[in-house]
Length: 119
Image (cartoon, rainbow, N blue to C red):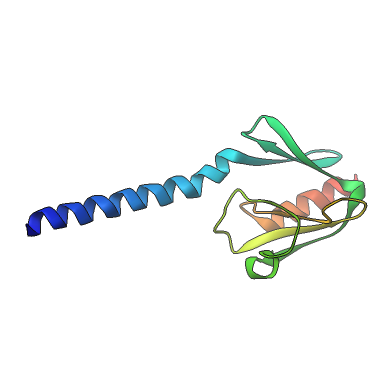
């Protein structure tokens, strides 16, 4: 009886860990970012264009903690759902004036976008 419960508990924990692992990496399969010459392109499943952020529409960019932006209306496009730092992009002349990204290195992402904006 105790052995059955122990095996059941171990199997349950293994399934929960597998589900958490799949959930965490599923977002990397769903969304991907591409910094291009004139815009940031968000792709669905790495090939279908989903959303563009043109550089001429960007008003401001900054790294923001997740608790500041979690409830702000905008385009939340996470590749890392548990990331504590997000890139918040404020735009003009758009339905949603904010877009939120979760790249691996938010500071490098912003630096790359700024360098592309100036050229």
